[in-house]
Structures are given as structure tokens and as C-alpha cells.
Image (cartoon, rainbow, N blue to C red; front, side, top):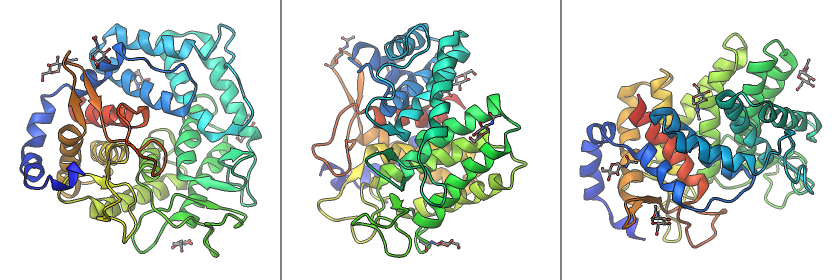
Length: 372
Ligand SMILES: *[C@@H]1O[C@H](CO)[C@@H](O)[C@H](O)[C@H]1NC(C)=O
Ligand SMILES: *[C@@H]1O[C@H](CO)[C@@H](O)[C@H](O)[C@H]1NC(C)=O
Ligand SMILES: *[C@@H]1O[C@H](CO)[C@@H](O)[C@H](O)[C@H]1NC(C)=O
Ligand SMILES: *[C@@H]1O[C@H](CO)[C@@H](O)[C@H](O)[C@H]1NC(C)=O
Ligand SMILES: *[C@@H]1O[C@H](CO)[C@@H](O)[C@H](O)[C@H]1NC(C)=O
């Protein structure tokens, strides 16, 4: 892989990143590049992840074309009565809930009630999601019974927390339930020797990959851990500080940050697709862009909010952002840019250009660098 040969150049670059990045415009450059590119009409979580990036660029620049684009995309999946198309479909998945965050944002920006109605539907889905014996949400019914995945924490718990903060701040049952999801995933998936978390666990222990004691799967996957790192730093905005879980999750975020700093590839500044030993440096493994963007965002936001000390993490974040802009941004002849190097699903090849799950978090990271 090209990336693995980049060593001195990346290190030299990292030193100059901070000043250059502050003067740059990647948030809107990437967002505006999407305006002339086809984007699927779907309520898939990946669409929501992309739309939030465009919305951040709108928040930064007030360019109305960005908000109209997102609204047109969302209007293709929500009708005027606030009904979601093809809902719920043939399965109920935590992934479907992620769009709720975008719906609440669109409701805020436009005041149109249909977005709130659609968000209410997704909040209702939480109440009918099946749970494993300890109360953890199934990732998807019927495909993944009793299984909790790190991805699902980001897709459902952040919306659950935001919705509760906005509409039911006194609902103690909901706050406890949100925290339970984090407590369970931590108890079963955190590898206490490295501080990293495995991708998920099976509460019934029947999956072929399940660890006999914890039920955890055997690998640490960068994007799954990226979702979780983002979930922790974002939920601290919405979750009540008076609840004892807030400090618990702050400490979890901080300890994961320490573990991630240790696993950053020193040559490129990015993170490996498969992060558990002995796979980093394996010829079939590679530095993956979506997870690297998510971690970089988490470090940057964590420092801005005062959860992480700049003296401990600024260099890590700068190297991460340098890796994203130098190794994963490509330019088209017409001046638009692409985000490269995102694995589509697990270890599938080839790597995808302009994957929503990579491009979105790249904009979140760029916004942290450029807007503050
Ligand atoms: C961002 O800056 C580059 C030059 O660094 C320029 O070519 C590009 O047009 C700018 N894009 C936007 C959307 O401002
Ligand atoms: C710019 O080029 C890209 C890549 O070929 C293309 O997808 C996009 O539609 C073009 N945009 C404009 C405004 O021409
Ligand atoms: C954009 O700004 C609005 C209004 O301040 C805010 O509600 C929204 O969360 C912001 N968008 C994102 C993606 O953070
Ligand atoms: C509070 O949250 C719980 C758990 O999500 C939910 O079942 C209940 O309906 C909520 N209560 C109110 C008053 O909305
Ligand atoms: C890690 O430690 C915590 C408490 O210190 C424990 O609850 C958890 O089960 C441990 N995780 C694993 C996978 O052993």
C-alpha cells in the first residue's frame, strides 16, 4: 500500500499541520464537493452521517445551498405527514435510528413539524427494540439476536440522549436506560489490557465468535471503535452531569483516548483497520480512513470541551488530521475533492472513494480544526 511507504514526509508534515489547518477550508470544500455528486435517497445511517457533515459546513459558512441539499435528501425519505418511507421495512435495526439526529436538526433549522413527527417515530422504535437478558438492545431484529455492537451505541444512544434532553429531561428511566447500554458494552467489550474495545458481544454466547466468558468477538475494528469514541464525546453534551453516569462515561472516553494514542501509526498518523495485535503491520492490514477520521474528531472535540489535555493529545490530533488531508484527500480537475481509503464493510476490498461513513467524519474533524 502506498501509505506504508510514507514516513518522513508525514512526520515533517505533522509539525506544520496546526497552523496550516486553521487557515484551511476543508469543511466546506468537502461539503460543497458533494453538491455536484449523486447521493442516494435513503434513510440509512450512513446518509445521516454524511448529512451532519454538510450541516456543519452550513453552520460554518451559512451557504444556503448546503442546507437545501440536505433538506432535499431528507424530504425524499420523509413525506409531508412526517411518515418515513418503507418504514420499518422487513427488520428493525438500531442503524435506522441514527437519522433521528438529522431529523431533529432539520426541525430546528426549518421549524417544520413533519421532521419532529418522524423523529418521534424513531424514538418510538427504541421502546419496541428487543433486548438481551441484561437489557442491552439487539443490534438488529431478527439478524443479530442478543448482540450489542459498538456501532449500535452511536446509532441509537446518541439520538436517545438528545431526544430525552430536549423533550423528556425529567425521564430518569430513560437516562438510566441510556447509561445501561454504555455499562453493558464496556463490561463485555473493553479489553482491560489494551484499553480498546472489541467490536461487539453476544449476550447469549451462541455466536461462533463469542468469547466463552464475556461473549465478545475477538477483534478490534477501527470504524466500530470510531463510532464508539464519537458516541462518548457527543453524548456528554446531552447527558445530565448530575447523573453519576456522566463521570463514568467521561472516564471511559479519557481512557479510550489514551489507548488510541498508543495505537496511532507513527509513520502515517492514521490507525489500522484491524487494531488488535498482531495485526497492525500485517501486509494485509492497512491504515483505514473512516476510523482515522473518527478518532481525530474525538481527540479534537475532547480537547475543545476540556475533557482531554492539549499537552497530551494535540500532537496526536494534528498528526491524525495531517494523515487525513495528505493521504486521503484527492482533487478532481474541476476543483472538487474526494475522500479516499474507506473500507465499505469489514475487510471488503477494494477501498471505496467518497464513502459517506468516511467523508462525514472527515468534515466533523475539519470543522473542529477550522471553526474553533
Ligand atoms: C478551498 O480552498 C482552496 C485553495 O486552498 C480553493 O481552491 C477552493 O476553491 C476552496 N473551496 C471552497 C469551497 O471554499
Ligand atoms: C467535478 O468532478 C467530479 C469528478 O469527476 C464530478 O463527480 C462532479 O460532478 C464535477 N462537479 C462539477 C461541478 O462539475
Ligand atoms: C448546527 O447548528 C444548529 C443551530 O445552532 C445546531 O442545532 C446543530 O446541532 C448544528 N449542527 C451540527 C451537525 O452540529
Ligand atoms: C421514559 O422513558 C422510558 C424508557 O425509554 C419510556 O418507556 C417512557 O415512555 C418514557 N416516559 C415518558 C413519560 O415519556
Ligand atoms: C474489565 O474490567 C471491568 C472492571 O474493572 C470488568 O467489569 C470487565 O468485565 C473487564 N472486562 C473484561 C473483558 O474482562
